[in-house]
Structure formats: structure tokens, C-alpha cells
Amino acid sequence: QVQLVESGGGLVQAGGSLRLSCAASGLIFSVNTMGWYRQAPGKQRELVASITIGGATNYAGSVRGRFTISRDNAKNTVYLQMNSLDSKDTAVYYCNADVWQSALARRAVWGQGTQVTVSS
Image (tube, rainbow, N blue to C red):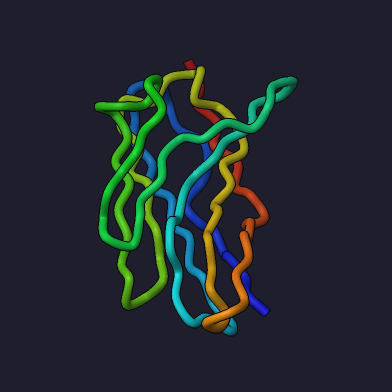
């Protein structure tokens, strides 16, 4: 099967930075779009940023200009550099990947989530 392992969350002061990483492992033929979502207490999960296998990116308006998503296709890893963090960014961040396990088998995979807490 396929697993996504996230790392890099933690506690940071407002205005600070964090870098999240998410590595896909297991039975993988290729990984298409990878992305980061977040869910704050009492709110729905929302897309933060995504990146295609070709490098095209998409950002939520609330993070554009502060966050940068990137990926290493050779390592099936996606990163999220978060700068100028604000208390509104506090949430559990989840990695998501669109994985082909063979030419016919495709599935969406989620990571376990990593907590990001921004103190004001």
C-alpha cells in the first residue's frame, strides 16, 4: 500500500516560519498532484496549496505570497514553506497525494496530519 508521512509541524510565534514535508512510500507507479490541506478547530478542511507533477501550483488566497509549495519527484516528496505565519494559520495540516499504483490503479491518499500552532 501507500503511506504519506508528514513532518515539520510545531509551535511558532507569529511572523515566524515553518517548513512541512510529506514523503510518499510504498507501492507507487507515479504520483500526480500533491497538496496540503488544513483543518482548524470547528472548521472544514480546506485546500492550502497543490502542485502537479509538472510543477504547476495553486494556492488559497489566504496564503498566497506567504507560503510556497514545492516537490521532489525523485523522492515523491512535497514541501510547504510557510512564512509570515499568523494565528489564523493554526490548524492540523494534512498532506494529500493522487497516486497511481499501477497503470490501472489510482487512489487518493492522506497523511495522518501534523499540528501547526502559531502563537500571537
